[in-house]
Length: 463
Image (tube, rainbow, N blue to C red; front, side, top):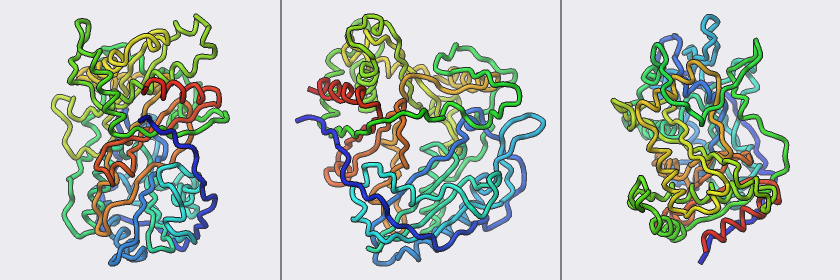
């Protein structure tokens, strides 16, 4: 058996969405109007992330009733997440980004589609038409007064519906967003909060004075011209380039094979980590790193290309790594970028186990002192994570495990934009729901020649 490379299925081009109502939802109870501090991790994430949660029809909960329940639950949850109904602003004195908790509301949109949920086709494969299921900005508001969160409920002709959410990334990371969804679901069911949110972002404030005690090669310092607005990260600007897009599906057995392959040459006399540290994420990430780095070599016979370095980036949750650990309900961004660097020659020659060890070492580097040093680096520099490839994992965030009054989503996914330097890991809907497995879909976007080489390397390494 081998991995499956999913070619683009027939995609519905227009899901024919009609918007029926656009409104703002305000906190159910008064929220203090005061500035809300954003950490140095938060402030570089000033861009919107869209997620879509698809639900089948439910006998007791029609889409209209769901919209009413969600709108009411949103009003109540905004009391606990006081920052979410506020607006971004730049402090004139400090030039620091913060949220003004002015209770100006989150967006709420009710829409319908002329399609049934089954008409949309493969929910796993990113479809540009899914953009119609998310509202990215409110036309009723000025550009500088947009909500930090907009929820859109779109009903389908079959009785199913989609909950599309657009949130500014500086409000949540993946783990805190899942907790937000759990709390929203609990309030929609008239239950207590699942997790009490901790809104104190000063737990991740820089030290005074800042103490940058590590070199941080994973971070790129930007020298901005005088007067340049630094509130939007320039690193996330897309380059105009035609990209092929493919999904590489790894079954639970494929992942076990990768782990077994890595374990054979991990934990040797020169190794820093024993075989037991070969995790699914580390094995898959190491495999992807090798394929991506070698596929970008312009000429396989060019000896110089083998000496070029490749840096892999991936997120590490620092909540349990700090001293003391962050509260379980920490509601902000608490992930930092780990890295591993090797030459292309090393990536080609070294066994998978050694690459897995490097991924493990990168995460192990993220101690309390290293995390605090990275936060302090952001206090004295304007910059962002920088590498050849970022592996962004939605694999085990568990958005589809959230239990709403109308049941769990059939599938939850982000709205995907193709980027050659970002490879996404998504849970596989089929193995998770039918086989109880833990498969993963690897979403890759590359120029045609690089994609052909990536695909060849991906399957060859799995053989």
